[in-house]
Length: 267
Image 1 (cartoon, rainbow, N blue to C red):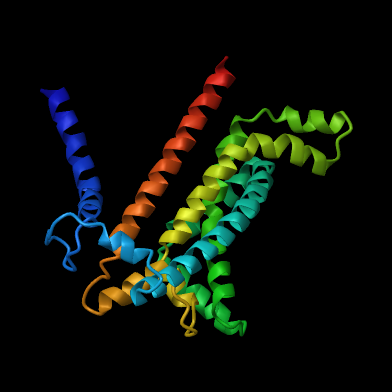
Image 2: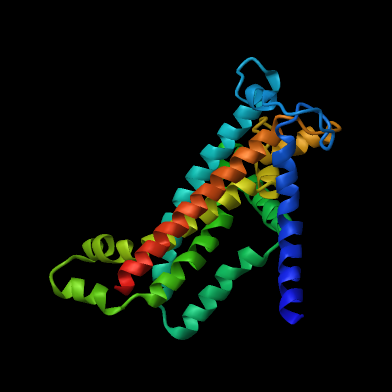
């Protein structure tokens, strides 16, 4: 009975988590403008999504383009800064390391609304024109701590003597970093990049406060503005489906490659 209740509880949680996503996927194949009103199987929403003639598709693609560019730049810079920061924190003394890890966790725990308002006031104080630059800087700011947390476990699992051995064999610190540390930290850096990319892709509050009044639209701000008009554009349903399936495929590929590498290391 205990096993049955435990499994039933797990399946209940899975249904709660994934039912809304499955609901969106199903109704992405219906032409109905009202979500929940099935009017028959159709792929017209997917056709409209990729149709350059549709006005909604044009503005939506502009928002997607801005979102992807900002997310890619932010994730890449955050990956570099986070990896360097993690290496520096790892080499600190125990007390200083704990302090830095505590300070690194504050932006993660801090509510997005406080981060967004603080960055908004900072950019105004520094007289920085709000737009692409401020949004990218803001996303790098809140994504970098997540990369640090992704890289730190790889550093703790790494043999600390490898870097010193590379230096003893004649490598410069930069060569040892490039040829010894980075290959060992690559899985953590990739995980941090994916996490930072997802966080940037998903962010609304920080983007809303730092985009200014130039009309910069990301996917989250586009959906917010669309919802305030009284409903969501039907083409958002196939878009959400494509994003979900794409991320699911990437996660499956990443986990398969990770499992294969762990088996090779075990051998």
